[in-house]
Every structure is written in C-alpha cells, then in structure tokens.
Amino acid sequence: MGKTNFKVEKYYKKARVGVLKTPHGEIKTPNLAFVATHGQIKLLNKADHKKADPDLMIANTFHLWVNKKVPEIKKAGGIHKFFGHKIPMMTDSGGFQVFSLGFGKMHGTGKIANKKVENRKLKADNPVKISDDGVIFKYNNKKYKLTPKKSIQIQHDIGANIIFVFDECTSPYHNHKYNLEALKRTNDWAVKCLKAHKTLNVHLETESPSLFGIVQGGIYEDLRKKSSRFIGSLDFDGFGIGGSFGEKQMKKIIGWALSGLPREKPRHLLGIGKIKDIFTAVEQGIDLFDCVIPAREARHGIIYTKKGKINIKKFKPLAVIYKKDRLKAQRLATIHNIKFYKNLFREIRQAIKNGQNLSTLRKEYNLR
RNA sequence: GGGUAGGUGGCGGAGUGGUCAAUCGCAUCAGACUGUAAAUCUGACGGCCUGACGGCCUACGGGGGUUCGAAUCCCUCCCUGCCCA
Image 1 (spheres, rainbow, N blue to C red):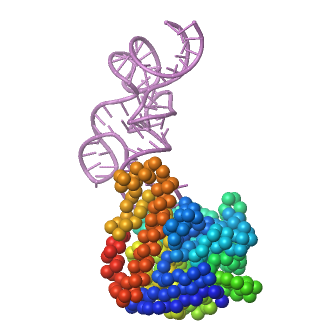
Image 2 (image 1 turned 120 degrees about the vertical axis):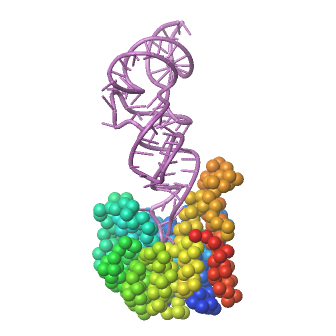
Image 3 (image 1 turned 90 degrees about the vertical axis):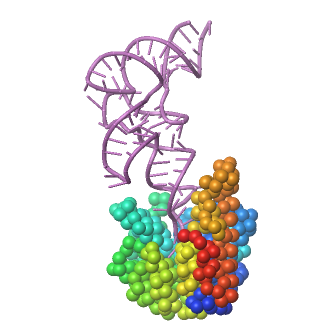
C-alpha cells in the first residue's frame, strides 16, 4: 500500500498524538492541512508559502482536473515538483464538489446546517447529476464525468502523498432515506476506489500515494456506525470523516463515525475547522483536519489572535494598510492565520503529550 | 458676449406628472464564512417613532407658478461643463 506510516505516540483519554511519515516529511498529529485547491494557498506566492510554512496542504482533484492542470502536473512528475512544494500533500477526491456544486447550491447551504432553514434560496434543479456509477458535473458549459476509478486515476497522476476515495457528500438537509441511498453508493465507490488504487500501485515503483476511505452517513447514528464498520473493515491507509453535521451534534457524530475504525490508523475530519470544533474533534480522537477557514477569513480581513478575531478593516492601524494595499494585507493575513493555526495545533499536541485536559487550552483559545 | 449640455441623497449616476424617500454602482456601517461556486456573500444606509407591520417630517440648485398631485411641466434667478467669438 501507500508509502505513509502512522504511529500513535500517546493518548490522553481519547485524544492522541502521533506521527504520520510520508516521503515528503513527517506530519505530527493532530494537525491540519491548509487548503490549496489549485495547488497553492490562495494569494500566496512561493516566498509566502515558505514564510507561512504549513505542515501539510490539500489540493483538489476536481478543480485541478477541470482546469486542465493534471497533464502538466503529471508531466512534471507530480504536484510536489510542479509547484515546488517540499511538504506532505493531500488531494481531495472531488466528492465534496458533488455536494457543493450540487445539493449545496440547490439547498442554499454549506455542509453545516445553519439555523435559517426558511431563508434558504432553493434551486429547482440539481446542476450535478448523480448516478450509481458516477457523477456528471457541468463546468464552463462542458460536462465532466467523475467516477471512482477516474478520481483515483487523476489523483495518482497528481501524485500527492495522501489521496481520498471518491464519495458522495450529502447535504445537511438530506433525510435518512436519501443518506442511506447515498451511503450505499459511497460504500460501493469505496470498494471500486480501493481496487483502482491497488491496480495503479502495482505499476508504480516510487512514492505511491496512501489512500484514505471516507465515512459518511449524515447526522444518523445507524448510518454513521454502519459506514464506519464497513469502511473501517477495508484495507485503507487511513480514514476521512466526511459529510454534513448538524449545528451541535458534531461530538456525537464523530464518535459514531470513529466507532468502527481501527485505532492504529489515522483519522481525518474532512473540512472542519473552526477552533471550537477542532478541540471537540481532537478530544474524540481525530488526528487530521483540513479547512478553508484560516485562509478564507484572512482574505475577508479577519486575523486570529488568542484574544479573539480582529477585523482588519475595523481596526484603525491595520485598516489604513488594508486600504492602501489590500492584496498585501490579505496575503499577510493569510500567512498570519496559518501560523496561528500551526501554533494552535502545536499547543494541542503538547497538551496531550503532557497529559493535560484540553479544556484548559480551549479556554485560552476562547473563540467561537 | 453668443450657443449648448447639465445641476438628484457622502460620491458617481438612473428616473422625466401619481405605483418615488427616489433603480443601480461606489463609499460607509453591521453580520456571515467549516473536504473553496468564496480577495466572497447577506443586511442596513435622509430624519424621527416602532420589536415588527407601519406612521410622521424634510427632500431631487434657489425662489415662484400650473395641477387633485411635481424630481418630473412653466417662469425667473444662481451655478457648472463644453463649443464659438
């Protein structure tokens, strides 16, 4: 299987610290992959990446693919060489785009339900066509069909260290019935992805990626547990937990989703992010995260501090700089937030190593 | 001096007799952002009252007029751009 190797070093209750070794370096866990959808963190140039110094990044299969970047990347010998990255890289499979470009638009929502259900803008048609063998996306008036096999193929071409199975991320507004239906597909696709992955790995002499399966099942206990058992029984190198969460059910759902997974393999909570949620998830035994929030909020003028978020457009000394050179302010804010998150995870790891309850540290990061 | 185009809310700029406190953009203010449809989106934005529905007042350069009714029509004054002398 893949060339990564994971070891849990210490537990404090369910929380754990570990090391995930890859051909491009070690990832100390818990840790977070900063989102670099098109291969680089938005707005950051090479020097900025060096300054920000993320431990891990995640690029996106769908976006690289439809933007015709994959052949170039493959030709260059993979995403590390193409972009000059020297750190471990992941790619997401495109499974999230099944939701974000489909039911996400249709239901007017992100993956976490917000309370204003009645205010959602509803779209009549799902622009994304989902069937049991794959998904048809429309992008720039062209159709793109992604299947489990295709996604794995593309991800091998991109050549990150860790790749994910192609799954169907459901909407927080999907009911049990739909989630069951989608879960059947996702499970079926997981098997197909694994098969495609192993076939490709046979022909690969160096740096083969590790494949992570994905647990789905929405907010439903039976589905999450079932998904966890099934995905956990397959020969993956690690596991992602995907899909939607209710506002306050995250802790429980993560618990269900982890229930069937082998303890010795890494668990990645897909697309989560907010600091309070990170604490919740680490306490349940999550090792890895990825999230757009630090970079996106930076672009929107928010910088993180331990005393709370600062909106640089409202904070006079920074507002002046922001107005003068907005792009630069956004770039610097991005670098700052990455460093802030890196430090957060460093402190989380240290607390677990020290055998400290995370609630103490959580209070220091008294952020919503 | 002659001709001509215009003067609208913080700015730009629609509207050209009633549905106009006045489209829209910018600025401002407030809020959001969780595997990036996102350097984005949402809301407020004349004043006063109201939790809200709503109500009242003052407003489209100044003044006067026509009309049931004017940012919109008429008269007059002031100002600005452009062209010609």
